[in-house]
Length: 593
Image 1 (cartoon, rainbow, N blue to C red):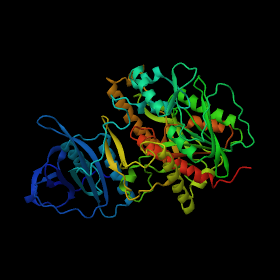
Image 2 (image 1 turned 90 degrees about the vertical axis):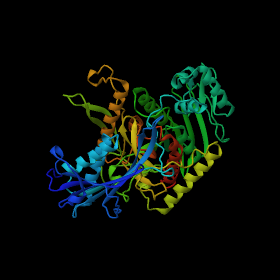
Image 3 (image 1 turned 120 degrees about the vertical axis):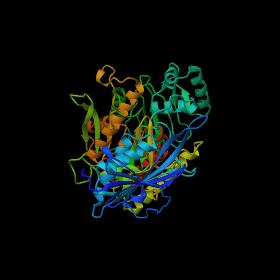
Image 4 (image 1 turned 180 degrees about the horizontal axis):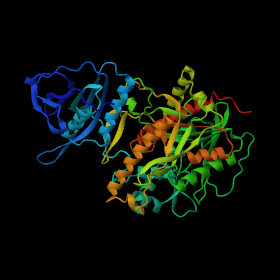
């Protein structure tokens, strides 16, 4: 990248109106003095601003294009109005600049913009001018097109898409979600009231509503505890037990499937034939739920772990203990599938390349190393600790654990995406799951959401820019095989004075920015396809049980870790996609002997 300027930088207003503005920033050797409005001096010597002529010749040929949406606050007489604006940035490079270098420069410019996003037109234009003025001699021209979005172009953009709003109106759906998250454990009314910041009377009213729909029931002989139940399928039996149970049988499962979300457990149960569900309840919170049956030629057992992720010690121990109990009860298991949700890795190169094999919402990622011949890179990597700079005490890195199965047959089967029969079966099985589960739900929540697939990039202050996916023509889901990762959340220590911010909002913003930057570094280092909420505790327990064949099968719900607020609407569909692929894989997996 050159820092020496060899030409003049000319800003040309092309279109100017209250709703649509276009400017071009070009490098020129020769100037038409009749068009000059202003010649900058001092630090900006060499920058020319042309007059507005009203003449617009569309830029037909350019090398790279990115478009994204932002919210603008428009001052009004009575109140301010928020409107969405679509911005297009077109790059024209000098002849002979390789495509890879074009992507590198455009990506860096775009990242520089969004990391500290300009809040107004003037600052935005100055930033782009400074970019051309001081760097990137290889760029011949940048055109910036800024247009208020029409109604049919607007993208729904919540203020903060990865956290709950400060106030929510509690409904029975929130209570149901809490109980589904805790399942197979129960929850006390007082704990639900504390979690949802409402009264116990309100919780009891919601529980009565859910009881009438056979969604929840009160636990017998317990202190006002409630649990999620599923009684819509007549071939499913749920038993509450306080005593030990004999898991021995003539035909023991050889495949174990581990889920974390209730929708995932429902999806995989749908493809299990001759299934029987046993719920072993313990008041201590170490409850287990096992569904046994057949998928293809295999005897399988599926379970749901309470909660999700390795973000805190209790969740880690719960997931690890649940996995260990599963594999201890069913000791003939040879293969383990960890079915769940994840976020697609936000790869900025995708923004500029419509042909890139990028991961989209509704796709499925199966864990494996970068290539099957690469025995050094991990199938799963988890950042479990963070490092800090000794001088500034700022977070600057992470310490990771690397995991790889000794037997990759599950990923090998999933990688056969050129096998038309595999892909056709996946589509068929997925649709069967969706149809079956939608019949028993009121809102068809397992169908593919109608929401647009956009990359939502945080830009600070709880805001973000929304970038339309660069593969809009691909409307079908796809299977990807490659590394999956997870990151432990950064938790601030209140006693750490060096990171003690002036107020909670600044502190939260600081943490989000640091986490976002480390996440990008983490994903690039390991060439990750997806990032989940944390599966190290489960994988550690699997390998501790001496099982060499395991794989994560992750349905993509967002561009974070699969658990964001914006991703919840995609979770049921992603669960159906992942479960459909699991069935297609197992029907091709040779039986164990």
